[in-house]
Length: 253
Image (cartoon, rainbow, N blue to C red):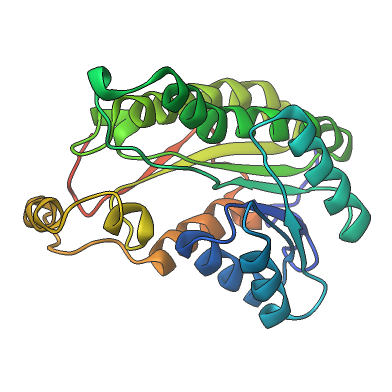
């Protein structure tokens, strides 16, 4: 049995971060770059990730891609491998929000939300897990939501379902990958400050929600980034199949 309690070093590891153009993605990119990871920053917004990669400097690369299709995911992985190397860490952060409840959810919106929030994680994981298995190392972090546990206070039906399914995907993949040195975990944040909540909810809704959060404020993107860094750290190799709550006490289980 290998006696390596600290696991492989973080410095130089290749991490693919999706949704890197948003507030949570940007905070995570800055955190991981500071810790020595080599980043492939993926987002549909080419300008956002190109700017971020330039600001971070070093060997980080920007990839513009639509991850909601198998071809888009395959192209992103190929560009990462060509520019940085094989994906050793995958952070499935890409996601879109909708407040639409059941009767207001159109067929198109249902499919759009599921394809971005769930399908992209499946496509990318299917592409990178074989290499992780062969190298006997990997870290996958899926970004869920409090809505995956409680149905959501303000989240729409499609959004809550997509995140709930992502939780089941996390459990399934964690069980499959554990013997190969790969950990698979998820984070379930609630109300991280950024456009996803400020543009998706009215000021009245935001105020009402904030009053319900025991710590009395919204989550900061840097706090989310800290959770990602923790789950992919070398000393987190004995944590897998977990969903880490990040909600200020709004939901306890």
